[in-house]
Image (cartoon, rainbow, N blue to C red; front, top):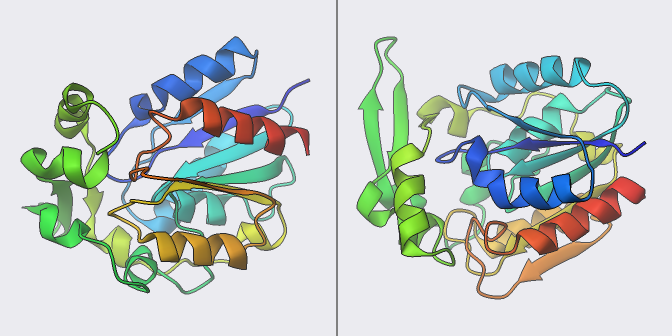
Length: 233
């Protein structure tokens, strides 16, 4: 029986950003769940994902994009069903590190200057990428028409979530991991992505030349190949 592939989107995206990947996985008869990541906080989102995992029968391969990497790193710890982690342009934090820490560890992120804040009733702040900057910042290797739709449907993340320290022992210390990312990621500097992959002991790291933060949309086949490798390991 094939493992269930659980896909976890990050900030400024939503579950349909996995559409190309889902189609290819379904064509290979994988069970797939694309989780609606709340994007409210690392612990909150990780607990939400852990509850979802408890409802899945059999083995699981967890795939996280961007901030989704923060979530899978914490949700998978101590869950025997999770057999592999796949990080896609994603954060793989050590305990105590935040997404902001890792994005700022090396030069190259221009995300901050593209963000638009929305004040929330509870005193917090939601962050969006400005629609007119979204294509270049987030999805430069996808068609402009697709990026325009993604910009409109993006889900915000709380400012607090980006600054929240990863609370627990990282799952990549006990679960094998694979990494895929683009060389031209403007959200997470490629040097940070390489650093995290090496630190996590990545079984295989795929760096795609010219790839954006959402390189797995135009290069869905490459990601599905990597997921297949992880699911069979």
